[in-house]
Amino acid sequence: MNSREMLVVKGLNGRKTLSGEVTISGAKNAALPLMAAAILFNKSVQIKKLPEIRDVIAMQELLSGLGATVSQKGQVLTITPAEKSKGELVADVAKRLRASIILTGPTLARYGKVVFPHPGGCVLGARPIDLFLSGYEKMGATVTHSGEAYTITAPRGGLRGADIFFKTMSMTGTEALMFAATRANGKTVLHNCAMEPEIAFLADCLNAGGAKITGAGTPTITITPTKTLKQKKVFPVLPDRIEAGSFLILGALLAKDLVIKNVIPEHLQIVIELLKESGVPITTTKNSIVIKNNIKPNSSFEPISFRTHEYPGFPTDLQAPMVVFLTQTKGESTVLETVFDNRFNFVQDLVRMGARASVWNPHQITVYGPSKLKARHLTGPDIRAGLAYIIAALLAQGTGTIDNVHLIDRGYADIEGRLSALGAKIERIES
Image 1 (spheres, rainbow, N blue to C red):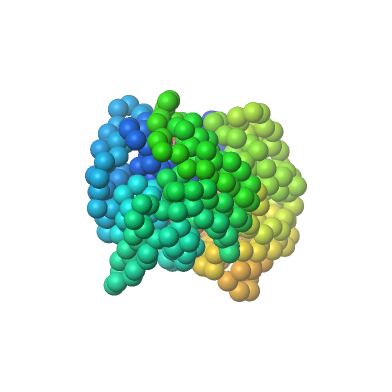
Image 2: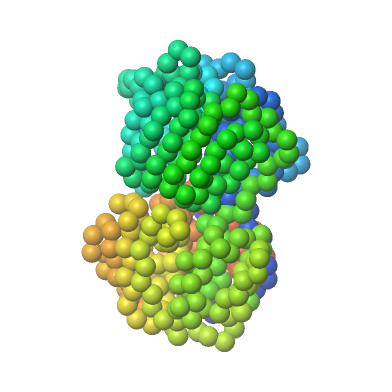
């Protein structure tokens, strides 16, 4: 996967011609923290249904740098944590992987020390890590910062249980502190926790190995530490609701019939309800979503307004694809972004393609539809906007190109192969 590659996309000029089935990968936001949590186990941990994405490879590199043995046989990844480690995250890998911050919790809890740079990622910018640092300090740890490196050291005898309140909901903060607390001395109670289904999944995996975690998936999580964690069966990663939502929005715009398999529809309830409200014909089963869309043109869809919010609200990671959808509806829609400041940086590129939208401030836009889009050369600023550009390019008239494919690869496996299987004309070339 070369950062100098780009996608060439032939537009469908608004026609609904895609059809077939797509199987959703394992969730990136469950896979990466589960890999990090393997450090907490006394022996090997096996994980299956991992997404084949760049971020999983980066997490493997970080684990190896901590002394873990990482191997893969077929679809099963085996992680054997080191008995001892200096606790130093490989700096150049950690800088490009935003999820590297999740490793600080299990590393500090097991080895008593963790050294890491400020976590990187894409152009959304570096996220604050004060929630992590203050949480570890409440558990008795000492935090120092020199140059680009943070060093966190647990007190002699290990971390202490604590009562911790998150001033803002944080998925990664909830995970990292939950992991750290499993090896602390004394009970830990986390308040104002994130409630994503991935967190409940991770707690279930730890509990299956002997942890005592209650309340995961609610605002209050209680962790009673246990001395040993031992895996009893292979952990399968749950389906990726963000990938499923991305294909759902793509299908609403471009598919005459589409079956999305290996999905948990209740994890996407707000997205499904909004699209249904707009007029998209959607049906669901226990583990699939079906769109039969060969009658209604996009221009007959009703406009819909929404605000992003922590789960179970509308996911910020689906905001960009949904904005593309709104460019095709018949009227005016407003979007409020409440999670990030820089997540409307893709809108001007849609305007260059012919969309009509007003960016009022970093948190609010208005989209006016329907608009005819024309193909352009685009440079993806982040994972999710990159996927939105693919949807826009497929909607457009003409042939477009998308740079920064390596960012899309961080969240979506073989995106061009899977879209080609549905009938799209899309290929990857050297830029």
